[in-house]
Image (cartoon, rainbow, N blue to C red; front, side, top):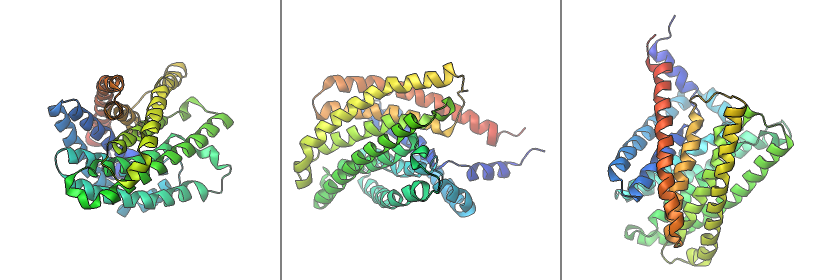
Length: 349
């Protein structure tokens, strides 16, 4: 007997991965990138999709929290899924930065407050529930690519704060915004180093099967790229004590992180080839594929901003070209998601 539509929807909400806000992140960053290169119509379309999916996911997540608390708790204690909650923070800030382009600065600031508070809370809760409180040892055996999403969340706070800081509407808060931007950027840098150590140790000490090399490993590249983007935005901020003290360091490390992100791309492509072509792991739609699209889009936008901030035109050209590759990946994954939703939820068989 075919399950009714309401039953299929409830089942899907119960199984909703906390990392699905990566869809918002990927769509929003591409909208920002397209606006950056002057393709305004496509940017506006992506912005609408970004805002709509954010609203839908907030509603579904709230529904899941109220009706399926056991599933939410299970996610919080699962090191393979818990760090996905940080995608809400990054998605909120990506949407906020895109809204600031349209002049909705107050809304951007509101979203920054929401995301900043959530970042502080989850930054203490998730490492404890998903990692430190586990009886299984050693903890490093549970490390995976999703851990880098914590870095992305931290740097998204920095990007949003650095975006608002130069605006005249926030003259009285420039010092605070500068501190928030540099603070969260600095925390993100240390978190990147920590996540990299844990994930590298897991890959070297334990067997890494083809099925283990999941799409979220691309977040390692996206985290490096957003660190470069946040650094570029900080380097362009107006004069403030926190900025003056760190501008040179931040700009230099941004170039280093961009370089590392660039180096990671061939590595990740080779890993995907090894997984899907050599070992024949089927390439089917899964929500974690958005964790591939977002890093591609973030790398493009980071390249565009960094190229301008540190006067490296070649970096900007690379970003402009790669932006269209990222959009192609977005279109493919969005189409696959639409087919998946049709087949598993909407269609009556």
